[in-house]
Length: 251
Image 1 (cartoon, rainbow, N blue to C red):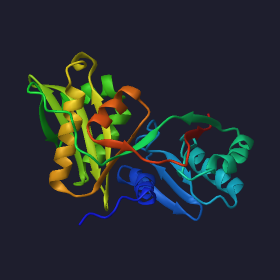
Image 2 (tube, rainbow, N blue to C red):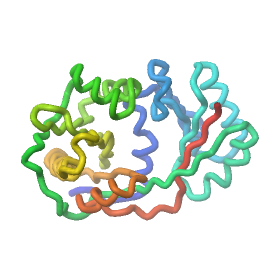
Image 3 (tube, rainbow, N blue to C red):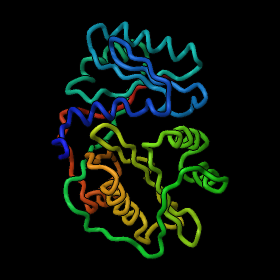
């Protein structure tokens, strides 16, 4: 029997997600993630404050930590209600820039109305070849993205799916399996292959692929209206949120 969906459990999974491709240290006030071999990756190098007692010293500590490693200090939210109101004074005092995000979380809870596309052949990718790396670097994010994916691929619970059209990589999506919850990530369709239904076919396939290997709850987040329409057609519904999404960083 699958466990009932719980927003708190989903958030716990989300906050610890980077530890599969970074080093992580737990503090009494939260977490610090870093990867000195991939300093350009924000997801690989950020802190999260979960305890708001003594925020001033927490901000000072994380700032010193990242600067000592030559990494830009960066903070992600802990997805708690009213957290920004409690920590923004300290962030402002230390010269951090705060950027608000419009990300929403979604959980898969009903059947997809999308369908496969015959022209798109989807398979699991266990190792990146040169052509894949070049495509990802040029069109998806850069070398830092490749480093994150390669680190991920070392973990057996990371499933990277590639969609191929006439033998050429057209789209990507991944799912990371955790205890009770699974996270969709790396969703991307190359510009030259858009408008063919490949994005929807990939998400439809990923949902069925995930269902075949686990009864975990499947979730994702997005701030892209076009992508959100596809996710909803694939069976994802908005998760009620009493928190804001944002990032803070210091040049």
